[in-house]
Length: 270
Image (cartoon, rainbow, N blue to C red):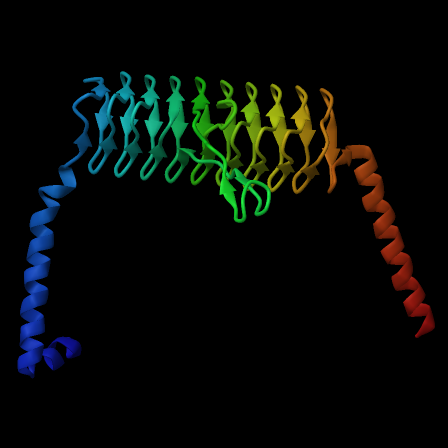
């Protein structure tokens, strides 16, 4: 209230107040018109049974199936296909992708952007040169992708996420990655380009897989582990670089004993 009184005591303050009132009136008017608008290209095929929220953009030749819900401010790019009964969260972008049925894309996810592919300076020219990123992302049925995940499009093969796989929030999937069926990948995990995961792989939070590495079916990777070499099926690993989980546990125990012995020795010398 004191701020308002101070403004109104001068001509400049009066003018500023009037301008502010006009702006608020414009915003109120906009809220009843623009906020209900959406942009759907003429060649897009959106099912009449789909629900499209405010400020959604759907590109040319895109297809959206029955029962799919696309929330506010989502962007569906040209030639994208989204199946039936999907949920596309607020602010999601989907480009260069084919999405199956009953897929959930949580808010802020980015699907189908270019991957991180470059020739270092001096390899293909004086400076860094971008490699072509021209392929797609294929997301199979019943996949869930958490908030603010990123899934890059392919360069030499389509990036693929198998049916029933679930990604936690903040997961990065590099270009050309193939992930099998029914995998569980916890938050802040990164899978580098062209890596391949089999079926039913479990990855703990903040773990990582190096490029071109192949992970067999039913492998388990402990949190904060870094896998730098391919793993046979049913492997259980931990650590950086990842080693068999029993070996990892033993190394942790040995380190704890060593640190404890150093502490005891220091106490004896005091």
